[in-house]
Each structure stands twice: as structure tokens, then as C-alpha cells.
Length: 190
Ligand SMILES: Cc1cc2nc3c(=O)[nH]c(=O)nc-3n(C[C@H](O)[C@H](O)[C@H](O)COP(=O)(O)O)c2cc1C
Image (cartoon, rainbow, N blue to C red; front, side):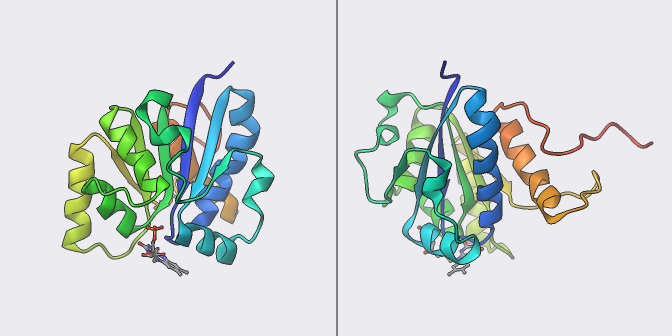
């Protein structure tokens, strides 16, 4: 039974390891929990994935769309997708989403989430932020989206790079309402 229809958009910012760990979770626990994941890369998203990760994204066995394919189901609100995560989200994609300019399927997926009042999480990766970025974050937040910086935490004492990365993927999954054990939860000081 499908519990959730989810779009994962991957843009051309750095930090594709966050997308990789999220997609690994979705391919395993997510699939078992009834999450139907659809995947789309922007043009530069695919280029940076190949540079930073290098594996074939088809191996996740999710429906995979090209950036220019505006016939994808989630390009229409009538397909009734529940959530969209853009991870990592470039500053350029943030700006286009903030201004309703969907030049590719990643941006259109986000635009549809905002108009349908569904969950949109942008895992922004840029440093430092300009005033333009900050204003675009405000605009997306005012429109109902969530801007989540790709910034890991350390209070759970992650011992490996994967565990550090999963302090971010845990919070992405939390924000879209998926129970997960990706990180040790804070229970107060010992
Ligand atoms: C190796 C590499 C790393 C990049 N890292 C970032 C980044 O961290 N944040 C960002 O906003 N753009 C980054 N860029 C630039 C984006 O790829 C570029 O702005 C691109 O047009 C984004 O396209 P998209 O928003 O359609 O995915 C990077 C580009 C390359 C080649």
C-alpha cells in the first residue's frame, strides 16, 4: 500500500552524499514503509552527482525523469504527490522557486508543492549567504516551504562520515513525517 508519494529532486549544489544517503534509506526502509519515491536530477545535478558520487542513480530502481520532462506525473497537482525534497538545493534553484520560475522539472515539482500546499523541503547548500539568498529563503518560507541548510550536527557524537551525513538525512525524514533511526536522538545531558 502506498503511504506517501514523494519526489526527490537533486540540483547542482555540492553535498550529493546527503542525496545518496537519503535515497539509500528510501530504497530500503522507505520502500518497505510504503513510500513511493520518484527521482529527478537537474542538468547540473547530474553532473555534480557524477563528480561527487559516481554511481548510476538507476540502481535505486526509482522512476527516474530527465530535467526537461514536464510530462512527469508530479508536474501536475492532480497527481497528488505528498511531498518534495530538493537535496542538495542550489542557490539558483532556491531563487527560481522563490520567484515561481520553473525552468526544469525540479523547479516545477517544487512549484506544484507550494501551490497545492504540500510539504516542500529545500536542503540548501551554499556558503556564505548573500542578501539575495536570505531574501529568497524568506520568500520560500512565507510561501509555505521549509528551507533546511545542509548543516550537520555533532551532539549525537557521530563517529563516521556517514553518521555525520545522517544527522542531516534524519532531519529531512523527520520533516516529511517518516519515522527513522538515522541518528541518535537527544535525550538531555547524561
Ligand atoms: C562541483 C560544483 C559544485 C557546486 N557547488 C554549489 C553549491 O554548493 N551551491 C550552489 O548553489 N551552487 C553550486 N554549484 C553551481 C551550480 O551547479 C550552478 O549554479 C548550477 O547552475 C545549478 O543548477 P541547478 O540549480 O539547475 O541545479 C556547483 C557547481 C559545481 C560544478
